[in-house]
Length: 220
Image 1 (cartoon, rainbow, N blue to C red):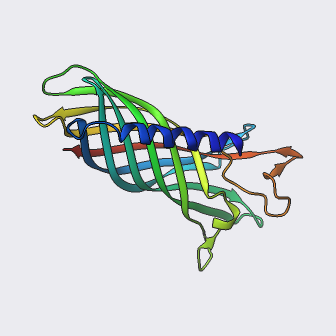
Image 2 (image 1 turned 90 degrees about the vertical axis):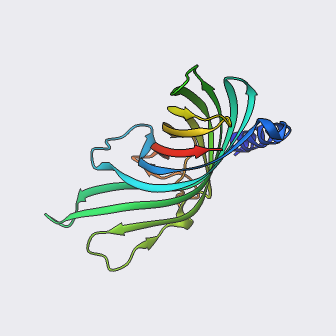
């Protein structure tokens, strides 16, 4: 909990510092795309029954120029993260589940753009804080989805690494395409009975988010 609070405080301070930049050094943009999400566990367990599934989302991006090639970007996005699980149960019957999580995400990153006239590649790195809006499980054979929001933490946080290319324009913005890897650092699942993380063979098991983002957009 203390580490989570420290991460949120640091990101808030970065946001406040960025807002002090001159208006002429700021860019505004729109972005959207897909993600491929799944769960990661600590300690690691057999995840052959888990598969990535495609989710959709998008939002806004603000950029604050720190130097000609370096900017501080803040993204606000609404993203769906879906993980698929299948396993045998009740004899030969195969049970399939889609875990669907909707997050409102704030992602502050540093973006380093390489020199380029028509196409400018860039790399980025930073963090991600997500607020869980909804969490549902769709099970094969079940009439309705099961709401599991109360079984999961409201806040998630993690690290982000990525790269992309931008087709710049004269205003300092342009069209861009990027890929990101997001690795959750917080345990998202609660153990409702014990008030702790789920126990597997008497070992505390942490469930965390992982996602690949493929995004496109425009900066003005």
